[in-house]
Amino acid sequence: MRRRDFLAGAGGLAAAGLAGCSGLVTTEPAGAPPVLSDRPDAVYFPTHVEGMKMAETGRAGSYRFALTYSYPHRFWNVNGREVTLTEIASEDDVHLMTTVWDADTGQILPETGLSLEIERDGELVSQEVIYPMLSQPMGFHYGANFGLDGDGTYEVTTAVGGVSTRRSGGFAGRFADPASATMQFDFSAAERDGIRYENTPDRAGERAAVEPMSMEGMPNGRARPTEELPGVVGEATSGDARVVVGVRDTPPEGVDGDGRYLYASVRTPYNAMVIPAMAMTASTGDFEGELVRTLDPELGYHYGAAVDAVGDAIEIEPTLPPQTARHEGYETAFVSFDPMEVTV
Image (cartoon, rainbow, N blue to C red):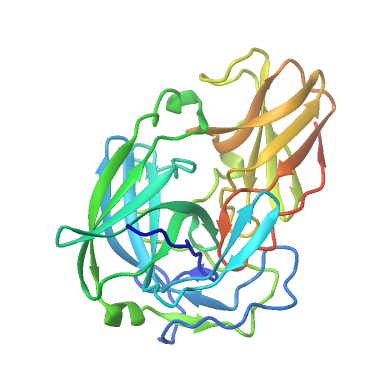
């Protein structure tokens, strides 16, 4: 068993092997350009875009899993307010990614706690807890770089410990139990090196993002569209994150308290990907306190609280940035926030 650094990938997992994606016309071995020295403190277009391929999907109870892979990636990890770059290690062969979602609704499930165990011919190759990540084309997922024992067939067991986030509405009482699924991964260095790869010097650093991917049988991490959310009263931007604020007449099942329900749905600009694992407070009317991380089939992943009353203005302040690793293009965004005010 060995523990190795998890790495997130320099921007894009966009093209090859993704249904409906096109426009990446070069095939090159992995080797990312240098990190930009003049990056904006916001979402920006990365220095290069990489494809990805599906290994296999699996299911265990209410959970669905997809195992995908690409070149090894550099990444930026977030610990509190500190953002740290981790480079690719010489022994890394592949970047494995796992997406977890609800089998009934197709909704991505952040904060499950997730580990991978890799075996070949019954022998353990690697085992580790892998970490939550944000990428522009893929949104929220779990990822890590791994060294393998050459070409061949590997058995990869994905295990979740249950969702730690508060669940409400139709998700109340669900996703509390651990589950696991074993998927097959046929690895070939030649096939990995055939994954499409494109340097993007003409767009690198631009205030933009790689288009979301599309892969058959696997959802991406997009937030609930604003027009589908109930009781929306306004929207604000801070730290380059978009915050959609709404008020429901009553709290959903699974939320303690009476009165109304104030919630904030936080998403990325451009692609509207869910931004999880933040800390956030709100002040309105008679309420001043935490907005709790919550998973709900109607509201999606959001931050919410039961409130007695809502006044003429709602003040919201993120107090801790999302504790997720970042692929290139997200590492300078969603770090420093100013308070926001939405007029009701």
